[in-house]
Amino acid sequence: MKKVLCIGELLIDFFTTHTEISIIEAKTFEKQAGGAPANVAATIAMLGGQAYFCGKVGNDAFGHFLKQTLEQAGVHTDQLIMDPSAPTTLAFVSRQKDGERDFIFNRGADELLCIEDLNLQQLMISDMYHFGSATALLSEPFSKTYEQLMQTMLMQDYFISFDPNYRADLWKHDTEQFIRKCEPFIEAANFIKMSDEELLLFARTDNFEQAIEWLTQLNDKTIAITQGASGTMVIQNRQITTVPAFPVNSVDTTGAGDAFVGAVLYQLSKYEDTNLSFNEWVTVIEFANRAASKVCEKVGAIESLSSLKELQ
Ligand SMILES: Nc1ncnc2c1ncn2[C@@H]1O[C@H](COP(=O)(O)OP(=O)(O)O)[C@@H](O)[C@H]1O
Ligand SMILES: O=C(O)C[C@@H](O)[C@H](O)C(=O)COP(=O)(O)O
Image 1 (tube, rainbow, N blue to C red):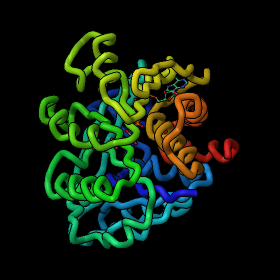
Image 2 (image 1 turned 180 degrees about the vertical axis):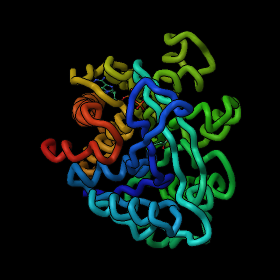
Image 3 (image 1 turned 90 degrees about the vertical axis):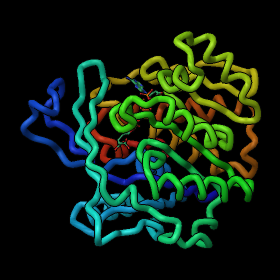
Image 4 (image 1 turned 30 degrees about the vertical axis):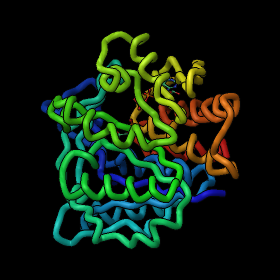
């Protein structure tokens, strides 16, 4: 089984304890471990895969809670840096009726990850690498570190996975800057997961058909467009199909996208050769839809992964 390293943010998600309430009005919040690439690593480990995480938290109570949560999920944390000079990053999350979420990010240690913090030799022991841009590409030094790591993995011809994870409030709606930062990752990746909204952003159109046409020109990679309860569209060269979602009673979709990516990477890590045929990809996506739907049945990202054990 291949080793998968997920690089990016590990943070505390403080969810409003009531739904359909704004962060302004909310009085109480619930603490949960989160951070998109960390959620991916936890999913892989919970499914029985070999997951590694690389990122930075503060050497404070929140940082220790996060490290412990990842380790309990079975993720290797040798490359998780605990910085005594910065607080752990916090996100405040409110959930609306339509499943949309509002975020306020208090950035801390995660954005301070430098290449000098890392033991590159140890990082290179993995075979597959997952990048997600939610906070990583936003500011230096983390964005530089991220680009350098991606280029290093690309030169070594490792398998690269990418999830753009657009957060409008973090990027202050500067979609051009977001697209520009993501483009090298889209070019380098073997597997990309995007939501349908992100697809329209990258294809620079409001027309879904035109956006799909743009996608079919990205050769030699497999792209999954997640569409919530409508399932996932999978595209490889010019082949396209939609794999239906698993119907569930969804209470919170936070982490569904990450569980989806984690489940894809877990399945891929079991193959000797990751150059799968289109039909093999469809089977992988069916499994990932099932894993993602499980996460929708509970609140939170990593906390709702316990039900994945039955899928092992
Ligand atoms: N309400 C739902 N019912 C069943 N499955 C869902 C639901 N919402 C999401 N999923 C599953 O989770 C995957 C990712 O969800 P989505 O919300 O599209 O991603 P993201 O969290 O990245 O925005 C979907 O492709 C689907 O398989
Ligand atoms: O990393 C973030 O942006 C916040 C995460 O903590 C949160 O867990 C999340 O948004 C998960 O992403 P999703 O899978 O796209 O719901």
